[in-house]
Image (cartoon, rainbow, N blue to C red; front, side):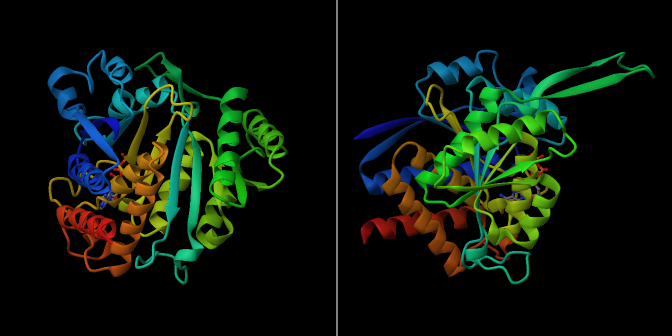
Length: 361
Ligand code: ATP
């Protein structure tokens, strides 16, 4: 029996509600499958802790995660109207991404059968994009500062950092991903017409790496027109590789096109497995619906599916994906963001029931 040690951080807002369904789905899938088992350790890190103790996680939080022998980290969401977003983000998520060198942020975006896109006339075959977002440097490297604070001469500087190593490894991951998953084309999001240093550098490295993958088509497009293409011709996109900021924006757009922010998952990967990887829905803590029990848990459940795939449990991952597809296609149980009336618990239960019935077949 394969055993996986999971760290679970429910976090803020709807995080605890959706993570409960994600964990429940993984545990019941493991029991039904019979080939693997999860040992779960939960951490109460997040904004309540910050308000109580002045920090989102303990000073030795990263060490606890690193030395705890974890195979993966499942995170709900982080953010709370009582605390500025840059404090919550830099208090938990961004330090984990950087310290654990989770340089790949993998974000698949799909329109599922049974779900309506806000784009008129687009069908499931038209929206199936995998975004590979750089996750440790670029615009979110955290390099900068403010001087003369509080005076009228105040200056703020935030520097974008691209390293050769950082750009090359993310671009290479995108091409390797395309090869492994039978995808045909990698599109690079750029802005080298106006950013003549960083983005020209990004483009050069993209072309060098692309030349090593003659079996995968490649192209570059300016981020502004690429955003328009996401809306006008999503069917022309396959794998998209983007910097931290560009990938962040494109994937919220893509999530909306696929029917709801509540459907889009992400995997923050350290592909070398030197550190644990982290899996979380791309949505935030959604304070407007937190505590109401109506959040869509699918993005969190699908993030768990990405974790299964990363752990090498491909059979179980494929089974869970089929269960997600089946429940969405049937359309009987769905949360309000998808036009239904189901609660988070009912939607999660429908997936778990479908998993059980597929294993029994
Ligand atoms: P962040 O800054 O952390 O990305 P945000 O406040 O900008 O967060 P979200 O928390 O992602 O954005 O919420 C944006 C909108 O999407 C809200 O109206 C929220 O209710 C909705 N939403 C987000 N996640 C879900 C979900 N899982 N189910 C239903 N609606 C959701």
